[in-house]
Length: 440
Image (tube, rainbow, N blue to C red; front, top):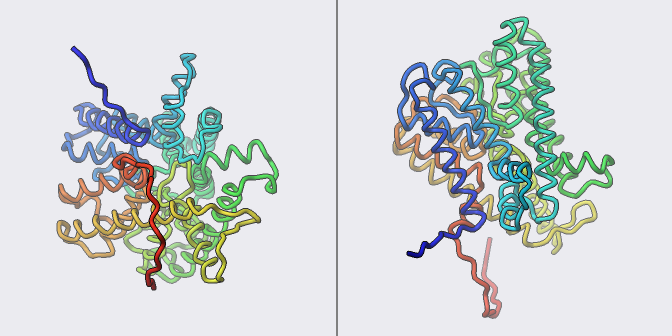
């Protein structure tokens, strides 16, 4: 009797393994001793997907609905999803002394969104060492702040949970109001924001910084990420502070200027896929909500724990438009030219992302009895694996939950990964003559 093995390409394998881990997580969260009160299968699946995709959207209160075992399952899924399933698999391979083949390298390349195979194994090693070190140091700082309030056991555990959730840009919190209780706490604001900025800037950039030290010698990608992150975060902070300063339900309700600055800073950078909040999202002005929508869609950096179309994708598109308007044919950034394939890839990622969002919003407008802006916010939050919510998540219908689960899944893996898993690329052997068409 002959057995036929199903051969999967890297994209298909990544999606399959990711889905299996989510299903296992759902089963573990459905166990009676994982929750304080039995939850439905769809809620277990939603929570497992949200954790695995490091999104942070919740249909039940994490701290109230889950036992210690359930919370450990959630934080394990966050770590697994944030650092990457295939990265863990490669680490286990290396610990067992097994050789890492070309197929494994291709899958890791796909998972970490790298452009070449060179250095992916080295990147995985650095990824684990750096990630665990940063999470441990952050846990110590948070413990110093929270242990006096909660006691040793609870204080260390809460610090452990939030450090992993923040570094992996998950946004899961053990409190129903996220971090609103620490809106003016400098330690919490600095440590948590540092974690999700570092996690969201991308492991490629961190590795580049570690080995090259000087800014001039960094790769173009690293330079774009560092400058882009600084500029967009600064602009976002000023915008949120300006738009919300006189809002009596947000910044105006805070007693000191210091608290208002901390709240503006935190709420400005958390849409870059972090998901924590120190202000009530539902109370923000519509202008601020719209601005946050843009930030969530852009997202974090490639090869990071965050989602979205990615900052460099957005920057390449902006540069492309700028170059076209100036009548030039080649995109150059910092004396480096950008290949046309990267421009097409950026356009494909953005276009597919918009299409998925449009379809999801259309479906939810039919199934959910909520304002359009609230639905749009929820969908983009899911696609960007952000986790911020205007209150829609807990009221979603069964179909609504399924749609958001799918969008979180797509947002984490990337629309192109799904497309590559379904497509069967063939080499074109026939070249057709060119002809112009009218556009614009």
